[in-house]
Structure formats: C-alpha cells, structure tokens
Image 1 (cartoon, rainbow, N blue to C red):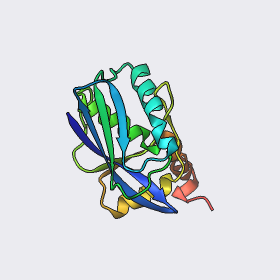
Image 2 (image 1 turned 90 degrees about the vertical axis):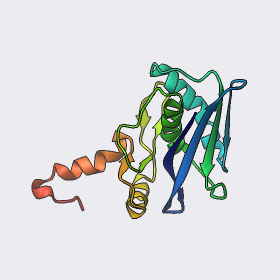
Image 3 (image 1 turned 90 degrees about the horizontal axis):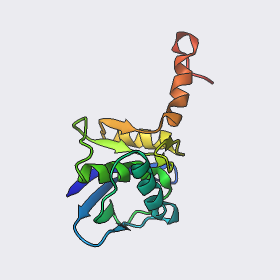
Image 4 (image 1 turned 30 degrees about the vertical axis):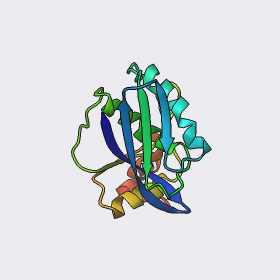
Length: 159
C-alpha cells in the first residue's frame, strides 16, 4: 500500500518541500530509501523502526520503499524521521490522516518514540507558508519561542 506525505529540507537557509512516498509491499523484509539521502537520513531507518515498535505499533514484516522527491535535491538531517514514520503507519493502515489538506511534517524521533526538536524549523515554517500548506507538524520543542511570546505582556514579541 502507498502513502504520500510531505517533509522539508534546507538548502542554505531556504526550505524546499519534499514529497515522501512510502510503499509497503510484499517481499523479503527490508528497508530501502532513494532520493539523495545523506548519512543522517539513512540512519533514520534505525530510529524510525525502534520508535514505531516502542510506541506499540507494528513494524511491517514486508519490504518498505521510501522515495524522497525531487530526486535531484540533497536531503539532510534527521527531520525526515517523522514523515517517514507517519507514512509507514499510514501505508500499513495503522494510522489514518486526521485532517484533509496539505501538511508538512518535520521532526527527529528518539528510539522510544519521542519527538526531538530540529534545527531550521523557522525556515521550514516560512517555506510551508509560502507554498500554501494547510498544516505544519513539528516537535513541541520547536514551539518554545512561540510560547515565550505569548507570556509577554500585551503579546509583545521578545527583542
């Protein structure tokens, strides 16, 4: 079964929306990722598998193919852990999207399934806004700046 989500990668300070396609298909169990992933992204296989299992979901006993498109843009860092995990769970029918519309997900998973803050979340948010995305899913740790703004008198932003 196929699932399609969106992630984001940074090229310099600029965010680029990346399509994350996940196909869980019959075959010898395995995990394959294509689309110019860097070393940290290739390691996401370990983080995603442990996070899914330790969050009491089932890891597929079949072949998992991940395609990160466009293929000519280098993808870096662990921020693709979240969209890959969500895609696997959707492709297996263990998770159904709660909201309709376009969404970008970005976050690093720990082995126990917790989300860790990522670098570049502001650039990802600005890029998501510019391409008309309806929802942005990021770890709570990346929302700390917004929370600190709301605690200031009269909603004043920090200097």
